[in-house]
Length: 232
Image (tube, rainbow, N blue to C red; front, side, top):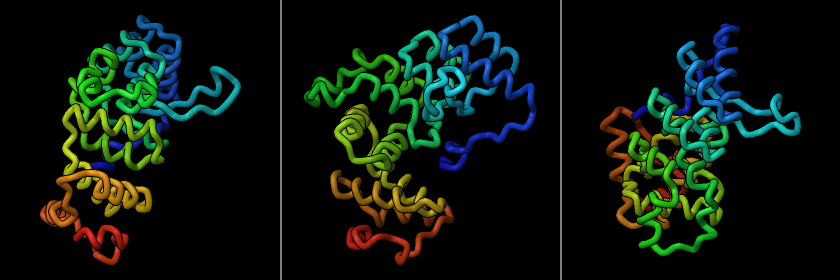
């Protein structure tokens, strides 16, 4: 999977396209399903990020895709519709958040202090998260992006949920190293990789690097932080 394709945002130049894209997002903000469907029929792009500053006039909100906004607002009908027509569940916002992160963060799961057995039944508590997983959300990729965020109790709880739902930690490490190899903002990727190797079992930096090498992606050992070099 190409990380850059997942995180890319199309640069719009056509005024009509911008208008219909905004129409879709505003309809999601209002939870207006008929207008959401109308905007989609008119060609609104699903995977473009928007802010709400012109709607609420108070602050510059974090950019979100229509799917991420529907989830943030706990609007199940909108989530269902957007996934049905092809919204990307793994799209990463400029703030480094995915739809699955919003699906879990909105319920403040860390405050539940749930046991692993309870977390395994979170699909009952977190229907949007379950819908995203059923739509093909990449759990390992989401795990990497969560570990790339600040090391907070909330993000740790999200990571625990992803593990119990089946995220493959060795794949998360692979995504962390791949992101570091292909992007200029390596620091957070290396921090995520270090956190993964230190917290999780069954992680091997050498195996992940071998996978990248097979794909023609090389990582110079001098690029790696000392902690990851020791892991090798």
